Length: 187
Image (cartoon, rainbow, N blue to C red; front, side):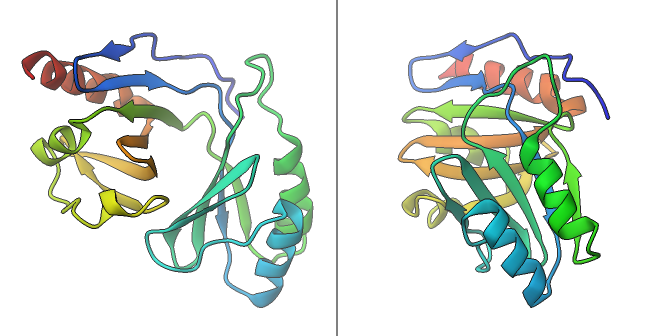
């Protein structure tokens, strides 16, 4: 397992868009599709996984983002210590899911950077580099999508009005942030 060792240090604050990394945040990928999988995950997380496409569900401590009919990203709503990359929830899910051959649990904390993007012009930013139609997305709090932004795979989660969490692979994060910074400097 990798150590969380690289942060995106730049924070972008424009008149209509602000971007900052939310770190360190636990991120787990879950895969499975049997009834027993859903039951064990529900008991372990104390929440129900979303089963409708492009939706999410949340509890006080966790958010579950639908990625496909048998795949979800579980994201902590709280930051954790930078000194560790061992998460109790990962161990619980591994014991209740993977060890019982009901599905797969993968820690993707170090793989994805989570950016919080806020402001009145975030959908102009997204539309300038993305083929996705955001008309319905921005109306529904909790909606999610996987799309391309400036030709980079991203996961978007509509957290609140004009407040979106963006997940991007760490290896593309700096490039994407530079593109966003360029956009913000022009508005």
